[in-house]
Image (cartoon, rainbow, N blue to C red; front, side, top):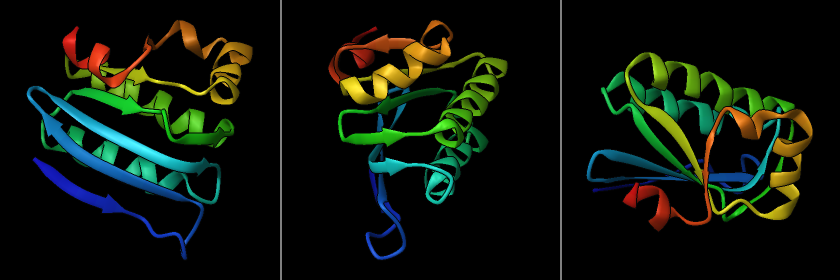
Length: 122
């Protein structure tokens, strides 16, 4: 089920698509994830968790930038998802975003997949 996109190019530099695929909630941020746009990602992640959807797949293939605020949004979602028996799976990270996770060591606490399809298949 596709629930559309939250956010607006006029409001910031991030748009977030959300859809349900089987037991997973697929969240697709597109653009730049930083302290100005982090709430646009936080809200649908929290909504999914509030609705009992604890397996989150974040399609990072359109994410062009992620700063520490964005990383903290994902880490917070991971903690909540794991507490609910699920997890956060990151898929399709572009090299510039993957580098942030590598430098901070955050890649070690997430399940990282080459593609959304691989994340959904797991």
